[in-house]
Image 1 (cartoon, rainbow, N blue to C red):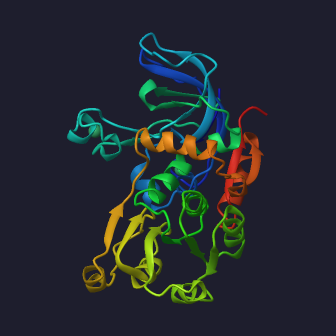
Image 2: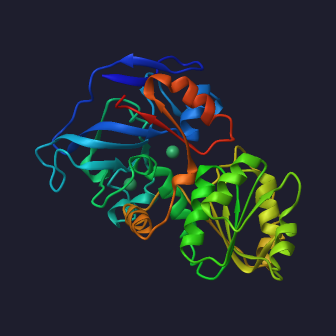
Image 3: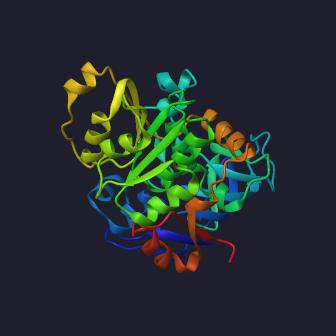
Length: 342
Ligand SMILES: [Zn+2]
Ligand SMILES: [Zn+2]
């Protein structure tokens, strides 16, 4: 089968013929239809410091996908050949305290699909049945392909109750934009999203943000004034991993404000801890999705009319992966889809 492989420990990706994945009795073999390109994949392509530490070559990339079940192992129940499925990209150990308690998203030995083991940028991918999400309601194939990052957005946005609240999102990458759409759909009073890319802010406006603020021009206090807020934001969703964004967020939270943090900082940085203490702010780290409560929430949000179409801004056949990756790497685009059926 064709697969997009990190073949050598150097920048680049290689489209190659490789053997189809082997499956055990508990596994599902999936014919991949469409995939989403993630920042993780860009790191692996460019072979930066993170990728050099996290990846062993050769590796098939990719964790965001939708596909059709091609075969199921003897022990697999409730999943049938022909089912439309996506996959939870975090494979958990099943043995640690949190796994045993059913809190699988808190597993201490998670292995990432397309990072720690072969992924979904291929004609076929194999997954344990416990990582397979069957789409039992009608869903757009491009949206189904990005259920993994959509799940990051939903998990972060719904970490704290936000009905009637004023929500601040720092970072208008695809996940920040999806989180804005989710927060608005779920009943936030206002959703302010910040970035320095005008084209991404424009996508965020289309997705439903109340105010999309270019922080190269105005700081967040300016957004507060514009919306007539007097006491600060109730909920913060940090999506950028950037020190200045976190600092500006902390400075603009209300007393008792709550921050969910998905953006992954590249290194340690200082924040105003005294402000966090005296404003009694809660900070929660988010990694991945709740299995499978987030997946359930994603499905019902879409059923309820949540529209993610503005966030999908590019689509390529898998042979054109280099152009697709280049577009995703501009940091101006929304989500880029690779089609594996062309
Ligand atoms: Zn991803
Ligand atoms: Zn575990």
